[in-house]
Image 1 (cartoon, rainbow, N blue to C red):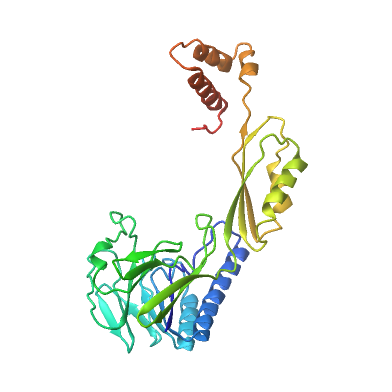
Image 2 (image 1 turned 180 degrees about the vertical axis):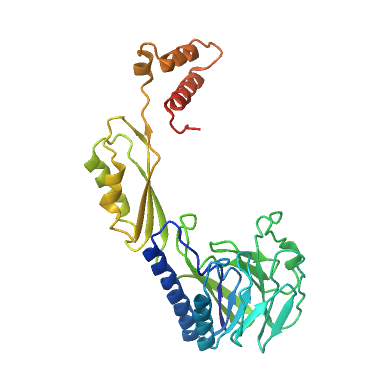
Length: 349
């Protein structure tokens, strides 16, 4: 038997940083990815698909989007179990496909010939299911098992020895898995696709295969585009062309259909030809989306500052140098941070 576990699709998300055109492209691609997922499920004779919450992104989705999703589910004829997450709203306004099964605030269980599925929405007042049968048992929850004291936290311990073979979790947008008691597994499938630079890396779903009550699972990368952050140190580089060449060398590793943020770091001289608008223009058409962030700092020549006449900065350095209670290391650190503060730079600490 094969199953698919997905979660945190956040269909209808706004992509506020993008232009209207590119945001619409991403939303259309996401629905196409959902269709591809159900096609893949049919190709492997999938018994059921589990969606562990955050299917839609709050109230931002349209009725057209909802109908498109349900059309895909209905045509697949695959049993699809859905658990509402903390970002989902009550979106069921009419008839849903017969093969779309919704868990609510009450613990529910569905039994089939060789497996059973239970679930309960929310992270408070959870009822721990107890299943002692010969069927392989799945249980769906949405919350954070790594921080049980948070608003969406879940205490995992009560679920460790109650007959759950696979705990299908949602809420955390990266793939995570571990042991659930002696025999079971807990799995975060991660999100099917990214919605921002806080979700870099490959996205996808988890495919589960059960044979003789033993399960194996694997993460399947599936997203068409990813968000990527590239940090580039340009210390010691002063010419515009040299900065461009350094960026080209680093960015060649990133696929052009991705959404890219480049962060420039390092210590540079005040004469550095760092023309940010021109730099961004060199690369913005090479990727689906591109942005450039400047986190560089100007080099601080303390000896040069000390020679300045009638300067707050030179007076500050003199006072620090005359303080015998400080070590040389402390003096150097205080001088650099102080000069950064006086120049209005971001502090090094």
